[in-house]
Image (cartoon, rainbow, N blue to C red; front, side, top):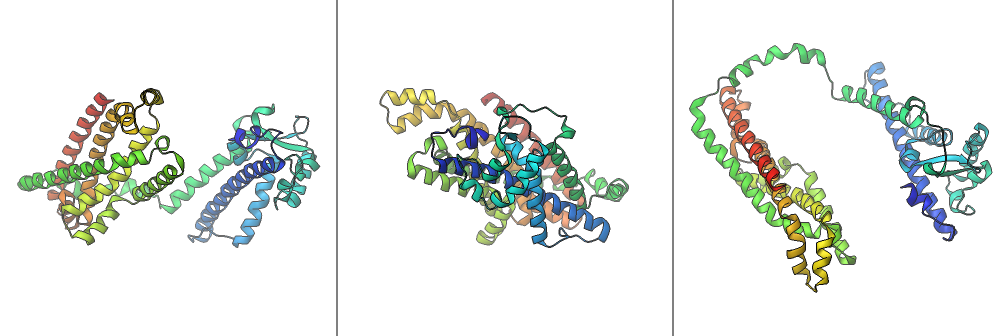
Length: 408
């Protein structure tokens, strides 16, 4: 990324282009550091409020105070050390002659940054693409490869220390938010004894009914996968970047990719609720929920495989004068047939597992009956259904993994 923002901009390019590129890189660095500091502030505030005031609040000071402090902290970090944003872009602060900056030069750059760097005027109106606060301080921002710096151990590098602090604060805050209680975890296990005893003594009289419900679940997954493949295969060609050229192609690519991302982000259980309201309770809304999610997931997997095909055979067939359909049939399909089959089997395996979950909201199959038994605390009946589910999932996982290995 640093080559994009700095090394790639040669002197013969117009000043405004160099200034714009410099502005874009500096904005990326500053925004990245500001986000990291805001996140650190809010997490530390939450931990402080929880331990000291026993309140679940992420705020300790007004937002405008936090914003001012974060801006100053980011400026100090970038002028007196190597921030996370600078590390991501591979940038370093150095003197004009390539030597290590002195403390006085860093302080001067920090002070003048408030007049030219913060309003961004100094970057846009800079001479030869160099910001005013850089010129006044005698410092410049360059790629890490362009300057020789002494390597320090990780505990003396500001960006690595910051990452460690962020990790520790995140861990502490996560434990507080999720109310992790290891004492209850290790002392409350005996309370579940009744449930485990019931699971280990399943109600075998329901075996026939359980197998019937299991067959419904398997066919729900099969129908959802089949319909999903029929829609996802053509959509994958529209969602592959290397196959969509021109303004129209890019527009279609963006729309399809965006729609699939939105659809995939909605969990199947939410789709099941929508379709239960739409077509009423039963196996069909479960099929529709799995179908919608399968289309989005398979389109992504298929299109990514299309983007990684070898262009050699495609160009060779195109050179013979073949039309677009012939190029797809003879140059693309032979390269994707096995991966597509592998992805399809994998998705069917996922759908079998998901089909047992969407039954909770009335999506039909064995999951719906399992949910009813658990609500009534009929653990022996639930244990039988769980045993059948485990056997089918294991068999599906084993079979699909063997088939994927052969296809791969």
